[in-house]
Length: 111
Length: 114
Image 1 (tube, rainbow over the protein chains, first blue to last red):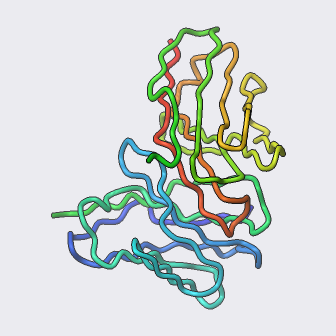
Image 2 (image 1 turned 90 degrees about the vertical axis):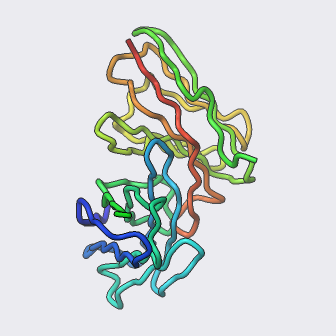
């Protein structure tokens, strides 16, 4: 399976934008890029996903490099509630084998 | 309304017992999953169940068995519980399998085996 690489942790200030990077140099043409987050003591929560084009939703934006070997999750205005572990995961387009979670990035938000 | 629910939230039991965790989704999804999060917070897929096709992670002991009475439910049965089974178990669902579809997770069941 194609793997992703994320920084172990990042720190940001409240109400500032946050850019969370993810490298996936061995991505295949049918892999979707998914982002999930897990707040303390909760189940993982879907954030956003995309294939080739940049994506926006109410939670975040996803910027995908032209060669698809990296992507960036953008939180436009971080709040304390965004403190969580963020996971970047590649998911096969036709697969049914679930999500392969890595260690993710622990995002710390300073007030 | 809760989209994906699990019962119980906490389960404490002794080694050797058999227990079940229930999962229900009211999203009309066709695919459901079970994940295990161990004490080091590492999340791992155990099973995915799509249109009666079961895909098993090969590392899951056969003491674990998913059972789906209908499309909205995927229960997890565990036989002969061991200390190492202590973990948080998450159920999830998606409209269909594959990368096009996002997954929605339940709140988790914390299993403690003593």
